[in-house]
Image (spheres, rainbow, N blue to C red):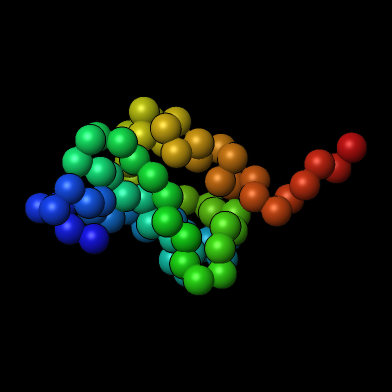
Length: 75
């Protein structure tokens, strides 16, 4: 993707629960919006974002929900 053509630019890696695997990326669009793109295995729970992004960016991509993917409801 190319920011010069109005596309997104990867700004951070989504790190899997093993602490080192990259399972996706956070992209920033020329509009200022942020989005997540997953690797070929699709959505997976994450443990962190490297490099860290701002609290506002985390809220926009719903960081809390990304850490809970696949865990289901235990009740």
